[in-house]
Image (cartoon, rainbow, N blue to C red; front, top):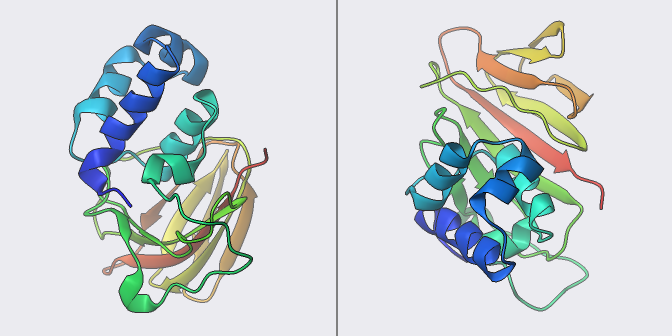
Amino acid sequence: MIEEAQVGKKIKEYRIAKKVTLRELAKETGFTKGYLSKIENTKKAPPVSTLIILSKALDISLSDIFGEKTDRRPACLVKKKERTVVVRDGTLFGYAYQKLADKFIDKHMQPYVLTLPKRVKKNAVFQHTGEEMLFVLEGTMKFLHGSNEYLVEEGDCIYFDASFPHYGVCHGEKGVKCLMVIYTPE
């Protein structure tokens, strides 16, 4: 398992091994060369949605990026104390992602506990292939999906097509904690 500070280096290793230039990767992903360079050289991991786009463009899995190479098992149990944080103080936007099933290799769904701070460092809009589900465990968030806006409160669940632009922000005086599951088709 690699640490957050190593995610960009791992992406760069795969890019170079596959003989893909930053320009080619930018064209494939829609990200700028500057943003991709920043990802490869920074100590903070980008949002999971960005990692999904990069993994597809490089024809690797998120498990590859995170260094999750162990024997394939039909089930995995991750105890609360064993959970790893993909992004601390999370990303450039202030989000934090805690992995829930990192021991299960080549999974089709990526489950996380997502924590949104009261105030984000920078607003971000996410968009990628697949579907997502957010179940609010604590707090209330305003969730924007395409041109629609939803108020998602503690105990509420929203399931959506992730190919539409989407993001959530805290609504109220406390942060938000969600169970987030991302499904990306092969």
